[in-house]
Image (cartoon, rainbow, N blue to C red; front, side):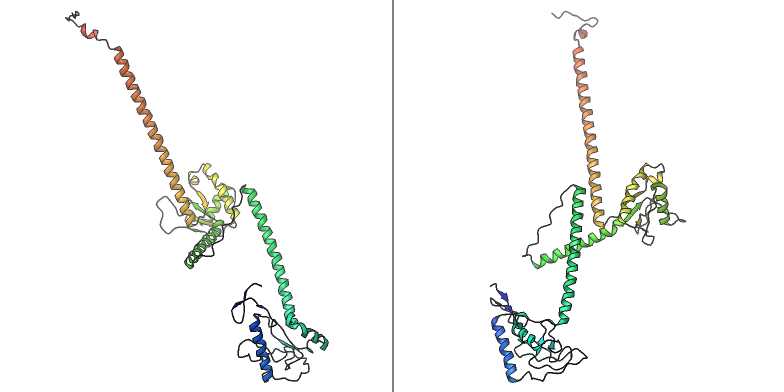
Length: 369
């Protein structure tokens, strides 16, 4: 038998079982409980009363028995829950869930059935009709919840399979569980990190329906929302539904001359934002120079904006490095070509040189002997 903690003495023992009091107690505590109950009965702490006749007007009972001095006994009502009449020592039943006491006459239970039930009640226990009905209702609700949960799990599995087929890549396995031996400081740091991640994901989900328009200059006599919708109708062949109350210009500082603040546009759905961004690439092929400088981008979180800025800086650095490498290579090739040409000209000049021309001068003597 596995060791278990006794609910009464709070000690780990081998003989802990579910007793008739609906508590898990060891045998020693159970014996003490029975001895205390017997002592109270012998000393007359529980006064015997006559059985009452059934009353047709039921009412709740608030009178309870005094608890035993050692704390092992539970309080119980001395009045019937249905008729509010007093109870005696015999011919009564106590519910194991709500601890309410009942006359067997109020329960329409015969003396024979009560005697048979009383012989096994310490093992089986007894539950009143109200608690049975409430328990059935709760069980039915739990079953409905489990069925709904199973449907949601099946839907999630179908979505995962669809994602696998769309991306053509296997979904990475879940991260390993955290070690049980982490310290309190580690748990605090982990909780803070999870809170930051949750806020970032919530902010990202909220921005999925937004787009940011750069290069759309405001007009004094036209609202920004109408200006954006006019741009969509004239150049993107669409007219999306926007939330006018949430559209606004971003930034507090006044932009330089010739530039304007970005316009935040809140759309109806994520698909509308994605479709609008996809169509915005056609603005580069327009004939109007003002329209060519208008860009429609996603509404990025601060972390995403920083990551995108770092990517742009790296791309610019790589491009500059490639251009410098190309210039250096071209310069080296020019220098090598110039050196080769110079050496070739010198060789040709040396081959054409004739020393006799210098000796055949007027008045000179060609005889060297």
